[in-house]
Length: 207
Image 1 (cartoon, rainbow, N blue to C red):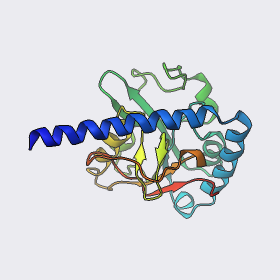
Image 2 (image 1 turned 60 degrees about the horizontal axis):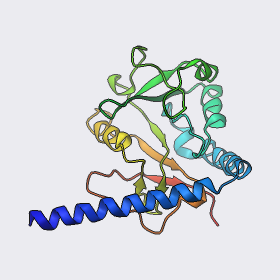
Image 3 (image 1 turned 90 degrees about the vertical axis):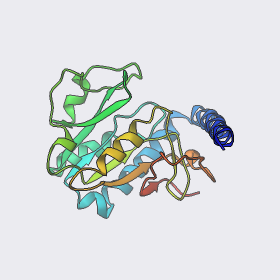
């Protein structure tokens, strides 16, 4: 039994590695203009979404070059007087918190990580979303690949899966999750294990 389980896990990890390589290839083939076009379209979808409009405390991500760009959405969060939270990663133990961002303009002053994205330093004390009674209402999530049932393939570190599991223990419960994807990131099936957390909804430009 243990040997069979080990074999199934090895096969799952191999399938994930192969799919990650294919998705990275697709993303490298996308022009900057095409990524910007789809990002703007998805930004409109988000700010018109009922869950977004009714949410007060929203967690976002600060985009890498191969992810749907978040600038327009983050600006809109502040224009509407909502509260914005961003990831604070701790690579030493794959831990992530969502901490409060004061303004859109503040992003440019934050330190750059090894992934070339801005984030508050570990010593930067900010409001932690899960430490507050209000928690989060909505999380806008990145990822490498998704299928139409909400299965998500991340980059292999488990930051978001671990964070969403922690959210389930908050008195307010798990926030609604929306993943933003280029249409090239949509797969027929994403291989997952029992520890992989589904997203509630995936937004992408239909073909």
